[in-house]
Picture 1 (tube, protein in one colour):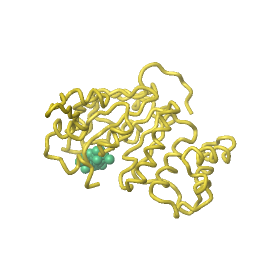
Picture 2 (cartoon, protein in one colour):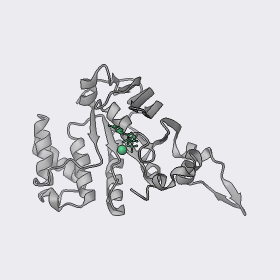
Picture 3 (cartoon, protein in one colour):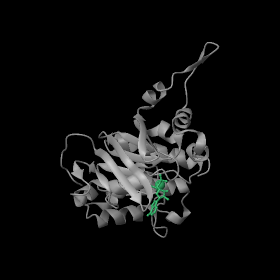
Picture 4 (spheres, helix red, strand yellow):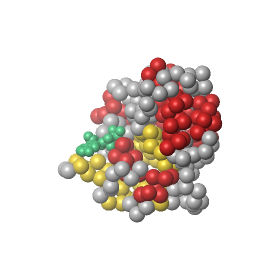
Length: 265
Ligand SMILES: Nc1ncnc2c1ncn2[C@@H]1O[C@H](COP(=O)(O)OP(=O)(O)O)[C@@H](O)[C@H]1O
Ligand SMILES: [Mg+2]
């Protein structure tokens, strides 16, 4: 863990651009993530969420713009950035043959931490996996695997965690389990940047929500702020608050309904 104390946001992104050949994916992306908060980068399939996360995690170079994570510039100090983060992708990186506990102990050993067993037991408890801890991961449900994956990403207490579509492909029950796990992270002061194409996931989890659309952040605010962008429609004395889904569709246009609602994931 990098113990450097920093002023300013945990993540700062300015004018980020990235193209793949002729495809302009990021066309000047700007946002900040305050420390200890959950920030949702919301966008349809192909909007550039993973591209953004990969740049922030130093796995990909931007064409232009700057990005800082935990006070370190991703281009100038990639090793410091890597020591400050963990990245959990859409596909759980756990070993099926090992038990949940063995997976955790292995990672704690690889990171040269003291007391790998105690670390594993603490994490199993935090993520409600104690009973399943001795079982092979191949017997786990999707939600349990994803929770174990998030637990593994916490080993060594990285101050910043990237969760790239943490619940894509999970059933509703598994998604709720993962939501509980994510909420706990920010409760412990960890900064979480999560990407999602599910509007209700952003609504459930995030302190701030930014919508990435056609290469730019087109809105960025708290759920309450986003709702204020759209005055409630008054119908027969009943105030109707717009859902985040309605806000999203109104801002992005209705051409990407299927992706935006996340029903085709
Ligand atoms: N290595 C690559 N080469 C070419 N195109 C890519 C590459 N990676 C991603 N893309 C394209 O860039 C766009 C954004 O991808 P991505 O960042 O994965 O979006 P998201 O995570 O929001 O679904 C998509 O159109 C995708 O097909
Ligand atoms: Mg993606």
